[in-house]
Length: 375
Image (cartoon, rainbow, N blue to C red; front, side, top):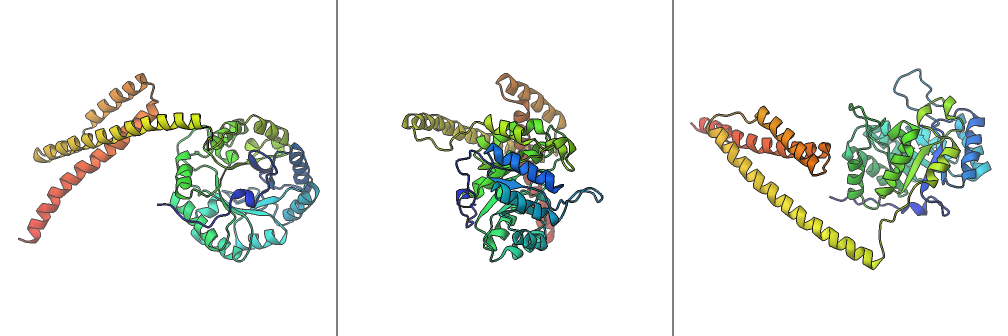
């Protein structure tokens, strides 16, 4: 089901001035006036960024860590904006933050991941924004909860904010990987499907947690038709007070942008479109066959469920499941399918099979209970 938000196109509220792709950049934290202004000048000199970001209030996981320079940093941002001409963007987490940022002339606000996870916090921010015409970006919640993300966007939109975008910064996960926050691209794609007109900005800095992976994630985001990037940049990342490993110098940022390939979401070449249409038709036919075969598989699963019920056999057969995994994953690899993909597909099919067989078993239990009730 699509969500109808009242949203203005991105290019109506942020001036790219021919810069491609859209990039919002600046230090993770405003540390000193000199650090912020010097970084802003170097970023402006690249000619490749559209807005300057800086953390003024920093929600940290544990007390005692640097939690932002506070309101004085807004004055530094004003100076950086005056000297470079770059519009400014900051994170807000309370109504007071909103009021102070707007009073200081901040051009773009964003709601952080921790705030998005709390509807009370989002509503407080939304109430403070009522009657104000300012762009607002909403980061995904810490955990992969699409409804929570959409709900936060709706609350801000309901307050009258039409210059609205989402920021995809990845999700917390217990599984260890190369990323600080798992991208879980499927969640961002689901958001785009639900709200097609919503601009999505990717935050490779927080996804990766490591500067060496920023270029890779940035390219992936653009290939998935995200509208821009938010990349943290510091004049000297080695001495940054927060998130040093994920920040890049302005020169490194410029190099990353230079090596990004920009691709178009739509093709106007008739010959290319015809070829795509032909290939997609082939995929549609195969998809139809896949659905048909899965349906046939589930019919057999029902027969197995009834047989197990009649012979008092447990639903789960661990040895059989292990056999399926080993054989099918190996077969998939031989056909050049990744083991991870094949395993996930099998787990999905197995989960549905268990559900169907459980339904059959419970149906018998339900009938027995009904007989006792009417006895």
